[in-house]
Image (cartoon, rainbow over all chains, first blue to last red; front, side, top):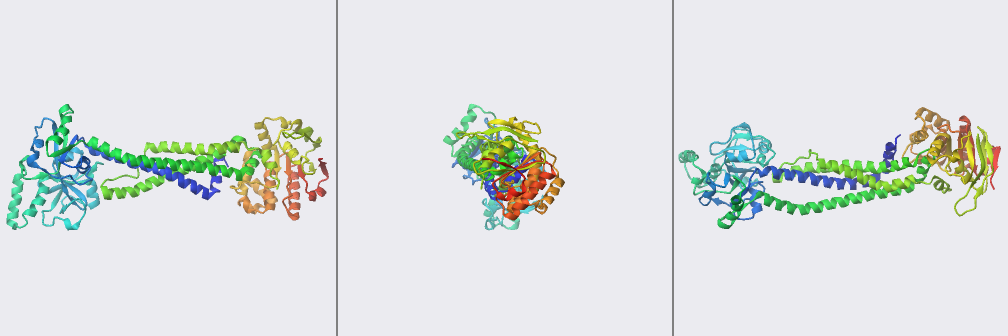
Length: 423
Length: 209
């Protein structure tokens, strides 16, 4: 029968008040915790997917869209870049570009994007093969870990791609050559887990096949051989083809490199976008909503603190006789003070726990939704050190809400209270 | 032995109330009578250490407790004085048993459920041990109050109008239980009342004017 036990019994004795306090408190804590969870994981995803890229070059349009589509694989591409016009960027001896990774986007398989590129794309994300080998021939693909897991793809499987980035059976390239899975990538935590990666030529082959739909089997076979012969050519040699964008790493961050983006934007038909700048712009946009939600959460927590205060304060009026009687039984004023403070703390701790359960529970549901709609996997099972601060904050709110009622209780005037009760 | 000498108390802005000196031997049972406003409750609160007197002193077994510091007085009260009020005012969130355990703890005694059950049995409310106080009748609640006052075997038991909220039957029962319980622990019993039903059974009476 220690003080904490008595506090606990007192709280349980008013179940409706307890529920009201817990609902308010856990909503506030849950909202803040959920914001933290989403924010940290989103930033982590954005961070990982930067992949050391300094510049993205693509067709003119929104720079944010270019970054989102080429680096995060979220939005639609801005358009095509004819190779004939982009040859200068593809020069392996480029004085400013250390690494140039070509991307051809636009096709997908059951909602997962197919990226036409080369082996350097896999290196960008430091992805390792978990089985099989990397694509060598046209139509060979390696599959990201999440794709393989969700679609139950194994090495050696074949599939036909769909046109566009959403799952639509009517858009399957039925008459095109199937892709063959040559390998599966291990989990990286970056966007490549959600992608199917192949050679640029494979993406072209799918669309070329449409043009050659009238070919006989024999001619078709001949055409395949033809492709093989062409595979060794550098990308710049395919003058009549197009790609979607280029991911660039600079040799060094000198003035020339920094001026490169402006040069491209002013002097070519293409645009160059810097991931860091665009993502900061995105954060700023998201930040407004986040700030508003945070302010709302703070308001809810403030109201819940007020609600704890009011319920403790009004319970004192009901309990003034029993508090006075406890004093006659030998309880010190400090005992009554602690009793009420503990009641505030217990509500705050319970509210915190409910709030954390609420946020991680909703994260579990949200993660499912985010993965389905954005191909990003979020986890509900990570716990952040910010949540410890949130716990500290909850304790402080519980104590502050209880301190005035507790002081009031400790000041109980035994004589006045009990003499006054002459029915 | 309880001894009150030259006792007076003054509420701010009111004339001082003086109380007659008296001495009660261990095991004595006194009735303190007087009209409303004669200071019955004030006297009881002074004797119970809930108020400090303006003048005079009170000693229990030669301990001059009316001059104790607040902390020492709280401890002394928990250990040596049991008080029964007009209503029980038990802690509503605790069962009868838990209320008595709390009394043992606050009085600095060992928690002893068996002792509590024996006492509840004597007071004929053992079957209510696990009930919340507000589920009990007024008579039963008053028995809980008696149990709470005597559980720590105090030297002095004070009762302030213990029967005035009860009907005749319960009044008689509570009165008897109070006297028996005081006898069982050999405590001094002082009952403050204006309830005439009690007059007949208390040979020692103190009249306040």
